[in-house]
Length: 282
Image 1 (cartoon, rainbow, N blue to C red):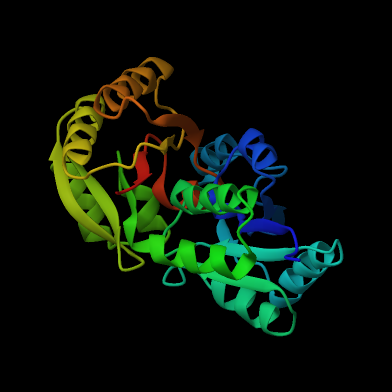
Image 2 (image 1 turned 180 degrees about the horizontal axis):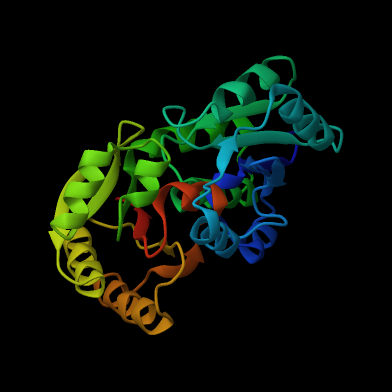
């Protein structure tokens, strides 16, 4: 008889507590390092804290993947319950989290790591998919193979209001950031082969850019009418978010729409007023 399957993820999936609870998804947090202080992603430190600290003294946090021993302890506790594990991580091109998970899993039986090739709620999309498969009675290795086959269909993109945080975090050059600010450009990024790439640059007010970006993204892909995430990094008005959600509902009437906030790991690189849509293509 197949063992029960638990879906796990690192904290970059940015799933809110109610979805973690509904789908019984367990989270291993990354570490947020701010000067001499350390926090667990999702506990004791918020994106508002990031902005407050940055505006106060220009300090941005650094992030660290869970270590091998952390993964070993995390997995072992779940295995001791008589379960098997399908584990998801942020793209291996962006973090060492997946590699550490694989090393830990290689010393244990019943752990199946999957490289999401994605980030943020796109990892969460795969986690929910895995949980729904587990509810239908699929075994761990079947779920892992299924999720691996979906990684190329997960659509991850977002538009930034500023490149300041990416520049400060070493993700783009100061010249690029300065040029974008001077020209009032709003870059749109997407995941390609596990890496982030700029695919478009918009101009105009950030609210008008959100709408243009979203309409184009909705028109460019056939969306599977399941879970669709609208994620922002704070400071986007609630009224604007609901208006954007209305555009999604018109285009994909059967979508289960989730409004979420990016966690500290993602926010520390993208900055405020970042907005993205994430879904799985047919």
